[in-house]
Length: 202
Image 1: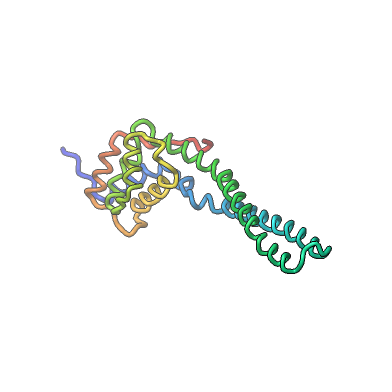
Image 2: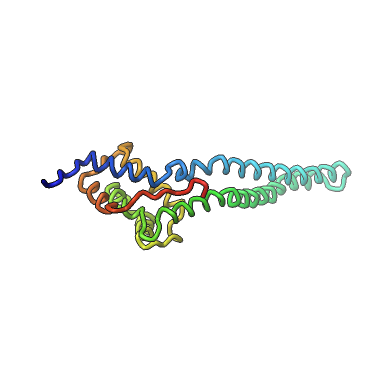
């Protein structure tokens, strides 16, 4: 007796189960994980700007009190000090941002590498992205990189949003329901592929 074809709902449920078993969604919420770190970087940059301005203002004020500079020069110094203070704050922000982001980016790169393996994983869900009409260059590059095993082209900035959008569609939380032909194509792509378990400590 021939096996009864699975319905769209059953296919979508099976695909969602496999997807959630492979991708730790909380780990792939890249921007949300960066938010508190960016607040820390901004705070340190602001403190740097305040410190630089305060030191410069203090020296200028001391010179003005001692009549070493006149009122006009002192007013100019007050305004000019904003430039080096801003530059110092920007440098500190960039350094802190990169320093704080690095462990998260490295962790995600390790996860992506483990999930993709030799034969790729994300490209198998490519039809979902096609249904969503996400055909921008970054997405096409990402899907191609997944198929070819090009880890260098799978940056967390692009990979994480793609994972979340696919999950949104599979879970039914998105604006579009997964079409039967798309579900069948994804199921065929996943045929014989086991969910990848990634060590949470990695």
